[in-house]
Amino acid sequence: MLDALLRDLTALPHRGTATPHGAEAARLLQKYLVDREATVRTESFQTPKTYVTIVYWLVGGLIAGLALIPVTGVAVGLIWYFILLAWRYFNWHYSFITKFPIQHTAHNVIGRWSARKVGESTRKVILMAHYDTAPISVLYSANQQATFRLSLVISLGLMMLAGVTAFLEAFSIGLPYVTYLRYGLMIYFLLQGILSTLGYWLKGYANGASDNATGVVAALATADQLRQADLTDTEIDVVLTSAEEVGMIGAYHYVEAHKREWKRAQTLVINFDTLGAGKLTVIEQTGTVDVIRYDNEPTRLARQLVETEAFRHRTQVGQWHTADFDSVWFVRNRIPVLALCALDENGRMPRIHQSDDTLDQVDRRPLETAIDLAEAVVKHWVSGN
Image (tube, rainbow, N blue to C red):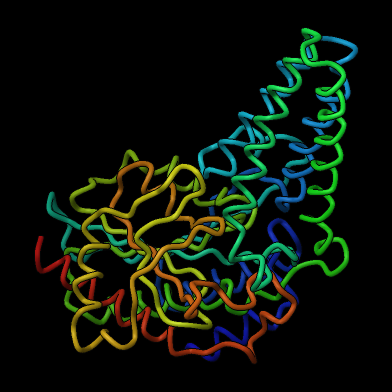
């Protein structure tokens, strides 16, 4: 099953959000779930196709505001508005910038196996992975990953500086030096906008074998394993999201639509992301300036299992501060979630958002370990509830 589904997903050139290939991947996943007797549905939502749209809005808004400072003091407010949008977006909060034009329709694919025994004590397990693929980006190369968080923090700091600079020039304070600084910031934001999106215009999308065909396979294989276990009062959902690479937008819409239905004490979520190289890693912390901590029951159980003989040499505990995971919205809503990915010895994800993220480069060992660990976490959680 692992090999067949991986081949089917990676046979597509890519699975970009709101593209024909992304739609074909969604149809493939629906068929796979139907064949396994799941109740299947899709949930649509509006999103930009890529983060390129969001970057251009943010950069364009800041540059336009800085350019308008000599014309009107209102531009100061415009600049601070875009700073707020960027601050929220790059700290993985909901940001209205994701609603800016141009919007497209994308779909989450959801399969459900209902509990055989339904009652007040019925538990819910949600197994998640995103199926969309990312634009190719130089910012995700092996060397750049190491400084990705720092570069984001610097960019956010320079945006704040732009806001202060605009305020000073609007009130004629520090002239002409603040004017020179304003021009320099305009050039910096323009270059950042070009650099961060150049890979997409030159090379398009990554194939996404590791990121994240492996995660999709892990979620589905874990569901198969749990269905064979004697979990009569446990409902299992597989949630395969789109637009993760745009800013975890599919997962945001899913959580917002359903969070009021879930009882926190009886809900467990596992998110699988990028399991094709390195060692399986239980994520304890993510975030940019705003640190996101995975301090919850499934993560605690996973940490305990990492210390056992079955997982000690196959699994590690770590952090990931290069972008974030779909699981961020569960953490922000205090819904118990375990985030699993694979990291190499330097704490990086090899080949993500690169043209060589292809099936022939995938190491199946972290993928198989993720399935084993996820199954063990769910069984321990069920037996303890």
